[in-house]
Image 1: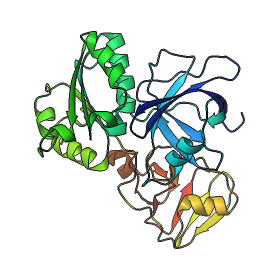
Image 2 (image 1 turned 180 degrees about the vertical axis):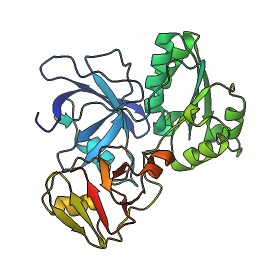
Image 3 (image 1 turned 120 degrees about the horizontal axis):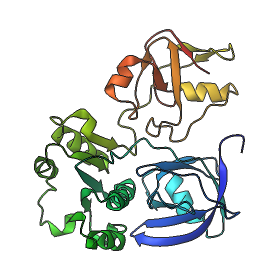
Length: 320
C-alpha cells in the first residue's frame, strides 16, 4: 500500500493468561511477511481510527506469521479493550512493517532478560533468538500470579533445551517480600547485556539499579510515557519541504496542530514511545518529552517526537 501499511488476516486467537490473548497474523494471500528481528514490533491500525504498537513474540526466522499478545487494560486508552472485544479469527487488519527500537545484541557473552507482566512479549522473542544462536541467556519473569503470566508453557519448552535459565517470581508467592530487581542486576556478569520491559515502576527501578553499567549494555523498552506531552503552545512550526508555517496553540501538541491543518504525519502511540513520528529538526530547540531517544540523542536536537515534544524556541523548522 502507498501508506506503507498492508493487510493481514487473524488466523488464530489464543488465551495465554488472565486478560491476555495472543493473535496469530498471516498474509491473506499466503505470501511471506516482511522479516523482523527479536524485540521488534508492528503498529496495528484499528477500525476505530486508533493505532497501537505491539511487540512480536514469535521466532524471527518465521516468515509465514506474526504473533502479538495483548493485555486487556481496563485503565488504558481503549485500544486493548477494543481489540479484545471486537477482533475475531478471520478478520482482516492493517499493520505497519516491523520496526525495532529494542534491538538484541546477538554477540553478547550473556544476556539477562527481565520481564514484568505483558512486558515478556519482546523478551520471549529475544529468548528464542538467543537459543537459536546457542547464546547464554537468563529470563527473569515477574507477574502477579501464575495465572497472570503469559507463555509459561513456551518458556518451559525453551528452558528444557538447557541454554535458557528461567527465574519466575510471583507476587502471590513472596509472602509480602518485594521483587529484588537490584539483586538480579548485581549478580549478572559484568559484561552481560541487560534488558527490561514491564510496568513503569519496574523500568525506573531497573534503570536506577543498572546506572553503573555501561550505557550500551542496558536496554529498556517503555510501553507508556513518563512525562505529560508539551501542550503549552505559543510557537510556530515551519515545514521545510512544503514551505508552510503552522502555529501551535496552547492545549495542542505539534502533531495535533499538523493534523488539524490537514497535514499528514506518521504517528502511532501518541506518547513518544514507539518512534513512529520521529522527525528531523533543521532549526530551533525542541522540548523533548519522549521515551524513545537517548539522552545524548535528545541533547543533539537532530530529531524529535512531534506527538509529545514541544519547542523551547519560538520557531521550529522541521523536515516535513
